[in-house]
View 1 (cartoon, rainbow over the protein chains, first blue to last red):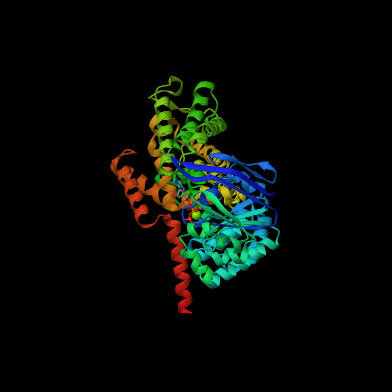
View 2: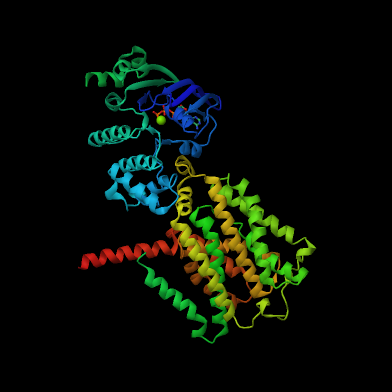
Length: 243
Length: 322
Ligand SMILES: Nc1ncnc2c1ncn2[C@@H]1O[C@H](COP(=O)(O)OP(=O)(O)OP(=O)(O)O)[C@@H](O)[C@H]1O
Ligand SMILES: [Mg+2]
């Protein structure tokens, strides 16, 4: 297993945002993480990425125990991530944002620049290279976060609602981008509310509800699981099944 | 950079300045502008590029000034020979102060730096070795050329220009390197920076060490030129505030911002001091306060930002005209 998270809990004050969730991810997979608002998906992600270590539980990445490792150690070990609310470096250009990521494995400016250019072309941001990141809209920022993460040359990429807030056309482009990232050999865990995305991208879906994993399996099967339907109050899922 | 011709022109004017006038007040003004540009550019490494607003840099300035005059008073060294000592001491203080304070964010960080600086000022005022409240003097008459004690401000002008040029060249290199990108990322947000593998604390510390060393050098140069330091002139909070204002006025986090800020602020300050008598008077505080309000209200990016929007607007205007 590339990633093994065992019985993670995360307690804020007296509130258990994550209560004993486990996740195994094999190399090359795309795993979809779904669940209603407040289910604990982002909190779980932040535990995996070292942003906010779990209260209890263990995380192994590439055979190493990284439970308490810092976010920068995770990045060095090959785990990259995007944020649900994008946090791009506003005052820097798009290309410079990506270069920050590239400097992780390339100390020299020229080499970092080359990597950044390659990543910008790959993510279709090359025409925006000299634009100030702060002037991008949400879709641009989300794409920039993906580009920046790719520039660190990761083994695994965690995407937290990287496709939320996009128009249907943009979503299709983003799905295509995620596929191409996987073809590069990068393992992907993706949190997504848009069921269409999970259905078309993920080989395996894991459903969170109130900090626990309530279902796991092929996306088609998971969305028909009565417990999952109940968790979503039926609403969202009915629409998906009709569609 | 398309602005190189302008930079060259600026350099030529600054280099020629003391030769263009025989008025000693104006010659002295040139040297003071450069000295202020050195300390503000040094502050800029941490406060501007890394976005960690220290209001306690008087500690490093004072360490430099005191090191020079302590080495003179107690060992009979030429004051400038105390500069490397001051730089070392400053880097030590930086390592000790920086490690815990960098865990604080925003205003809390700034407040902690003020507290540390005030502590240093009170300490200096009570240590006899440092001249306590009276302070320390430099050589009353030069014993050799190494004392760098001149009546004319002109030699200081060129000494300061050389140091400033070195510092800006170093800053320019840093800005283009991995460290420059990492500091900009830290300024943009710790959380995102760390997710990309930036060791935030380590790079903040690098920036602080560099910044402290050069601020200390500015303090030594000050002591060499003025030949006197006491707790207020070496470690007063006004010294820290002035670095922040000069850099912010010209544009924090830009290469030439601190120099531009010094060119605007120092003549203003020296003129009002000459008019109203004394230095560090109420008028100085009023000017500083007014500048803070103006920057905060209208141009958080300082003059550099104004300049940038002026040239882009100029270009757009030219494009429309064509
Ligand atoms: N730092 C924090 N302190 C206290 N409570 C928190 C904190 N972060 C998250 N929570 C709470 O933990 C629960 C899970 O939040 P989380 O953001 O992980 O959910 P999510 O599944 O990502 O939801 P969404 O789909 O809305 O993004 C929520 O009830 C949230 O209010
Ligand atoms: Mg979330």
